[in-house]
Image (cartoon, rainbow, N blue to C red; front, side, top):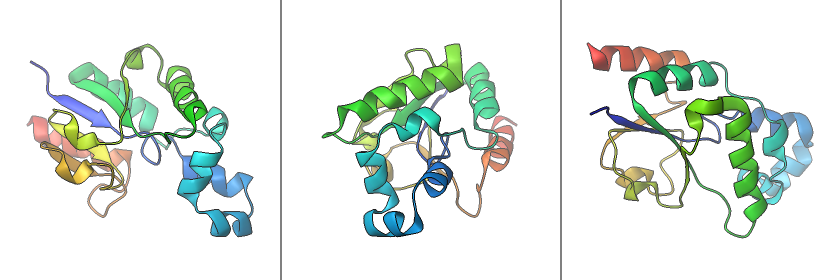
Length: 153
């Protein structure tokens, strides 16, 4: 049985912060915060680009593991749920078909690994291994893939 990996979307697969910084003024970002901007403007997902190495890494991991995209979405903005689904389809293609899970409590899911840039929304309660994307040990997709190469040895 293949090991199961969950991968967060915002800030791990989607380079949402770069897109926000290009699209909104510094003043607007400072007043509202990136999280609130994501919640208020779901259409930003339609134009945001993938993180460097994310698409190739997702596809490689999908060949070796049981991989799902696991993300949260604002309850009061259902358009963001749709935007995330469309982004996944457009950028990750058939390997991600029906592999998007939206949950506000990531700790409820059963799996071996969770690649996430935060510890919020139940990540701290995840029973498998949390790979903290963007941290000192795994700052980017190259380092994440190196870690999985070591795990398989």
